[in-house]
Image (tube, rainbow, N blue to C red; front, side):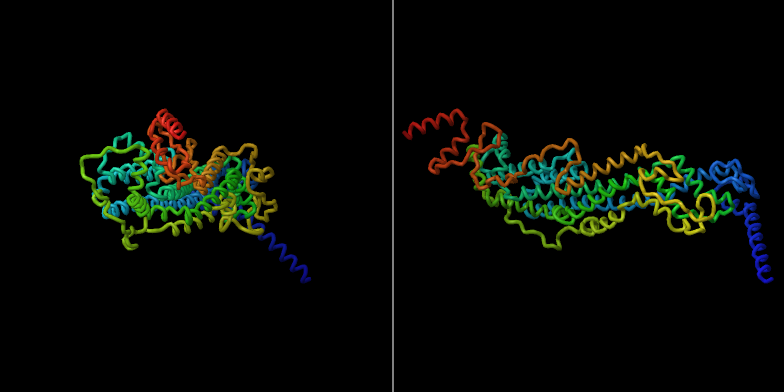
Length: 552
């Protein structure tokens, strides 16, 4: 008896719940409120559920939706689909736009500080002799800035540095030999043989290598930082396909039609929809990650051997050391020039001392307290440490977008979620990321044979930038198709191990070539043969013939 009564109670409870649910489904008040909160006309929503055989996306039957509502909610779903992706992309863009600005400002201020430091130091050390020749140094920094901003298409670093040292040699050579007059053609002879003379010691060679590596690394790294927000902006602007919008509408707003406005989509359901909608974006991930790895690798260089700050900050000291080396070896350098380019023409002016020629003695460097303050209120180590964290965090950004979107209060778990047709568990298998995995997507029709053109273009851009970054990691600049060879050495002697820098130099004023006559074996005839090198070839041959006859 008790069992029968209990069963009867259960039957009534089920019937009551069913009737209550039916009444709620027929009552569209909650839908009217939610629909109007989206900015739509509340009068579009029927007061009670209607038979919706006309709906194209949502389940048919008794519904709180009309065809007009479905069309409006479909447009809303396009906006709602794009919103989280756009927000995540905007955060990424903002992060790296700021980092690019920080690095760019830092590098530019380092250059400005270095130029100011050199000017202050040289005014104090060399006085009016520097002031009269200051434009040479200003031009050097002007070209360094041009390279940083415009690259090798505007400035060839090797050529700039070679010209700087050749011009500096010419001016100093005149200053330490004021008792002579030098024609333009004579000074051209001197300039042509700057490398062989090595008047500034090993400073030009070392500085060229350091500057080239540091500038290439700094410039390429900032280009990479600027590329991140650019790619993110373009990729996030890719519009959703009609099939994607339809799937998003079904996932987000079909619960409205059943009167269940608070019902969230099942997480796995959301993942399949979003992976179908973002299939092309996910294919960007491989080149994106390769690019970020190259950025991280170059960042390590910026902390170490290619540290822009450690190269630029003491450039004034290095150039001053080169000048002092020239001053101390001015007599030997002058004698080699006189042997190779011929004896100069003496002037009527009396011979002046080195001190009188404008060089007041060995440079005394500033104390650390007198050095310029850190550029942009930071330093290289701090900037690199910060950006490395951001770069690592940005890896797999595109392939994890569906997981990031389908999280938190946007989705629900278990049986208490919308599976596309009802409030129940989602049974379909979750597909992988990328275009190739969407062949059997149950919600979004994806043509895997037609990848998005804009995204493919960004993949190409990332691949190209990655090659630039890898080249910069080795100290090479390949950011322009018109890149020339490595260029001439910058007044330092050659870099090759085969170069014997201890050999005497010999010049030929009749030809502009830089090849050298071999070192004489007979020491007794060395001075004679050195003189021969400055004679025309025909005359040299005649003298050699006469010497041979004399020897017999």
